[in-house]
Length: 371
Image (cartoon, rainbow, N blue to C red; front, side, top):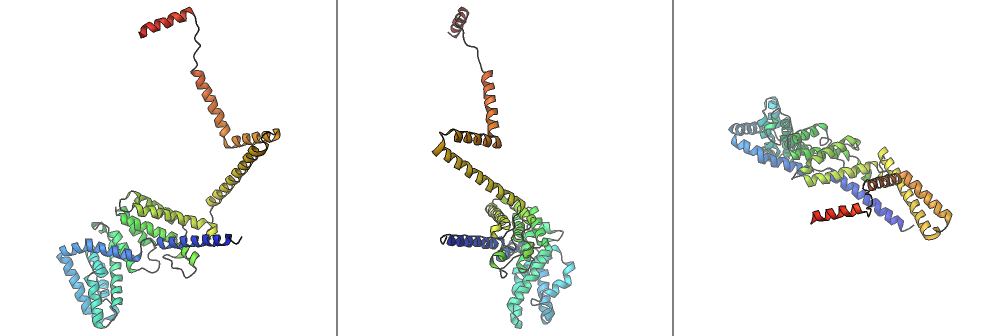
């Protein structure tokens, strides 16, 4: 009894570690990873377009100049780009949204905002953060622009920029962000498909960390959204689409295993889950099968080792065997197979050879033909 307690404690600790690891992995794409991917996309795609377009360079120069002139107005925000964006928000074209968004996310505009904040004696980190939020909002708006398809991966860039700029709260789990990633994936961007699946998985596992670590646990999404079967089904469908990908096939396979583990945790009553009808039926079937198998094994051993020569024991075993064959259908299959085999044997039957003069003459004729 004393030795079983440490084993149970180790089993509980292992289960808790599994849930904690799943909750940590369910964040899937961490904010730092999303920020790095958004900056990489800006440097790879937007920077080349800005360098090649004189109008975009002039637009960014105008934005920087107006932000510098607005330095005395504290109401415009720490970066001073807020006023420029607010004044021209309806008139900004798609290319201007992308250019200024990337510039504020991790470009000259962000460094300019931090430099001017230091010159004024303000907090440089606050200015950089303000620039990041404005840049993320602009890129996310560009991902919903009617011309977003002109820039491959714009949906993923906008979603990553928004997640990077608004890392707290429920903004990384809402339907708007999910729709942006799904749109990017449908347009052929595999990273968008992966991000969409991560959002749905993140929503599905919400609440597991709180169940294990208590009320102080960190949840990426609102815990009330956790356990939705629609999110699990959607995440599984998205990850299955990536199994044929050369870039994300291994990641998708691991995510599918995480979805399966999360589903098991939600319905496992031993880990605080609520079992559904399928779980209860499967559990009852397994228990019934184990009991029947145990009873059959006991009867076989009992018969083979002790009383197989006693008539009543033999009759009981034969009766039990006939009942088992009738219930499982094996006896019916065996009888049908025997009848089919007998019928095939009858079809192949040949009359016996009779040793007569006519038969010997026919055999001699066939021998001459062979020669």
